[in-house]
Length: 187
Image (tube, rainbow, N blue to C red; front, side):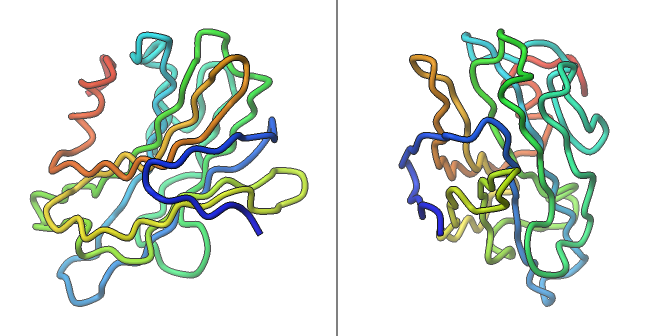
């Protein structure tokens, strides 16, 4: 059993090859089926995207260095377990990458009047690629009744070691907000 993190907590990531799994369930009574999407922003030491090829999401499933690979878009969140995953191989990361921020957005959340208050059982977890054992998990336990996106967590490099921080920062914004925040040219 892995470490159960709370918002703001940090832990070392000892594995160099792991999966970042995200899961959620959408309340059936909240209108149209919600499509949640995970995006990874591979950032340099200034907190900006290394380049557009280091943005990993449903339309670009692999980073330029091949270190981060997206499992593909799950439009319903149905079923048990991880809804979308990202495989991360630290050894393949471009040396300019100093952190990876994981964001989940509700596709067209504003247009469909959807928010994370209508989503339950949300989590992000890190699973060792070789042993398939959960290293750590962060379960969202806030309401997020107006937020359409959440920065779930980030991996960051400090003194040569990789660490994970449980963020849980909610925003009433879409993917474009983060694309602009982290300096991408993709719109």
